[in-house]
Image (cartoon, rainbow over all chains, first blue to last red; front, side):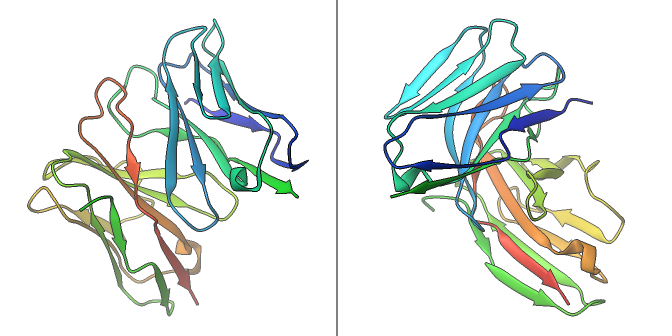
Length: 113
Length: 115
């Protein structure tokens, strides 16, 4: 079965600093999704990547999928307190696009002002 | 509605009690998913509906867990004879059509605490 490993598990950064969160898959990724979760709340969709080498940006957040489609990174530029939360990567199971996602355990981000 | 709505937001149950968790998906969304999220973990798949058909229930941890979506809209997740290990956040998600990687929209979850 496919597993997603996220690193780091938790991260504390000073406001204004850049940071990167990684998501590594044990198998080739056919669809990779990034979500943000506030503690005790639902998931907010951030971005979806499907093609090797793909990169997407929204405001100060950039997500990339490597050429081999086994690793994705989420980069936040000039972090703000509003970026704090749990970042989860999710993936379509191999050969099963259209069913439930597999998730990593999440990266907890704290931003100190 | 504007988003996926789950109720109740919080539920405390005594061990052995039955509970029912409700999910109102976004109107018109065909696919509906239930996930269980333990503290410090990512969401784990429980079951999946396409309209009223339950296409996959392989993630349900035991026969105490039962889900239905009789009219292809609202769904209920029922847990019978709750145990302490059932304590978790239960998330519901819906999507127009998951094929092709359309993103799923999540509700805020129901936090279940079994005491």
